[in-house]
Length: 200
Image 1 (cartoon, rainbow, N blue to C red):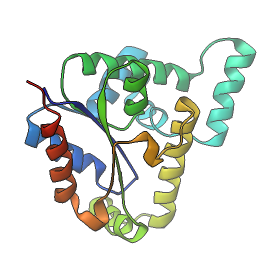
Image 2: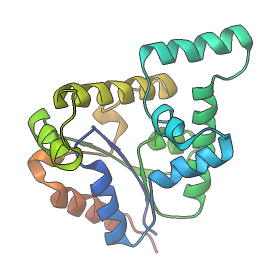
Image 3: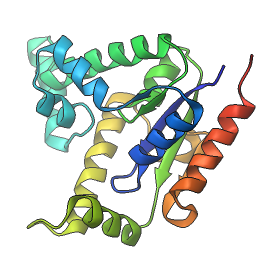
């Protein structure tokens, strides 16, 4: 049986596309936006709120979460979304081998004692800038600023909920540079490792 594969990624590095290709190659489910849908349905928050607050944070949001819990002794909206997200991830993992993109899945599964192949996808700024413009186009905000803001939000969110450093190689089994290797080589590496871990 193939392992569960988690993919964490820098914004613009192609992590979702790589995860999608890995899932297709191994013929296992990909869970990304479906997590947003399920968390929204279970938590009562809108999909837009879950999409942002379920993976991104800022210092002010982290402060608000801890301050609210301290003063009112109940979870903040972002904490409630995280709890619902954890439950959804664990329920999906119980169904069998799959690819889960983002949302602290590596930490959630590890804490629950569920083995997973954890992957981090990154690339240099120039590669990501080009890719973001190709996929999403230009906006009034400079593309590099958009990239740094997204990465900063993911890093803060990950640190707040896991007490780990996002992108630290010690937290992942594979750390791949999609800009240098190319997306398909990343897919080949991940699927090759997954197949070697396949236990009938």
